[in-house]
Length: 354
Image 1 (cartoon, rainbow, N blue to C red):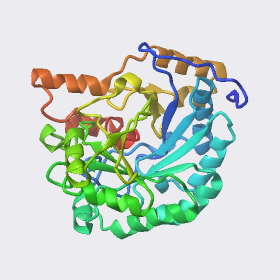
Image 2 (cartoon, rainbow, N blue to C red):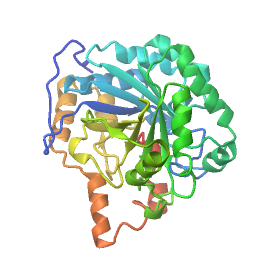
Image 3 (cartoon, rainbow, N blue to C red):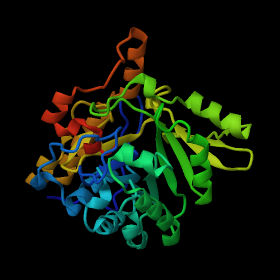
């Protein structure tokens, strides 16, 4: 198998809507140590076969092929990525390619205190921790686990290790944590972190999504203004998923309005599952198998061609299409039925990196 060109100038590729391929979410496992209601609420799932899960060397090789066609940013995801042993070794492998400008990690934080320092020393650039509530009893109800204290330890460890720009991701759910908007902003301020509120998304099916549970961007801003007064939007969103805002004292927070105000038009992201399926959209029903040609020894040129042709044909606007169903009264429940999820584990969000 040929190696990707680590010193090769990338050849940019655009999809049918002129969107470049700049960002890759790389899932390293489909396993998780929590059972969050909005992601993977059931205790047992059909897990990916161990022999299908890509090695770190295979993941780094794939990342190099994506860098060949313009990818500059990689986010390591899961499942819970820190369940994959020796993750810092993957970080070092990825950083051998100088075209990759940023490597970030999204984690639930349970194991972060144990690994933060070695990840920082390996060269990881940024960390995002999922934190949906500040109340231990709510955390237990949401996740099915009593791990709140360990998540707080993980958040504490980020600054101690030396990481800048900690982000906290909060899925806002009506009737569950929508009374914690201001407390979470205040909590983030203590750690010089930026909290990002994510509208509850109807991806997968086991999460029992409904529109009534969505806390909209407008509603979040109403709560923030009621407490702080003026909220000023920041202009530099670009392809980033979050619209960022500044409070009068300079505190910055973000909102990811995927459900009520989709941003498909600027999306430059795709995702590779732990077993090598490439999804062009979080809402996609199928992905392209990159594992088989990779393991068969396909040439670097053949791998690049697959990725280029796949992205050039991309016309996915999944969030916008789901939003459009509201107009005809068809956005009433989950995207995928639970029986189908059991047949194909790739269809649930935890298998494709969220």
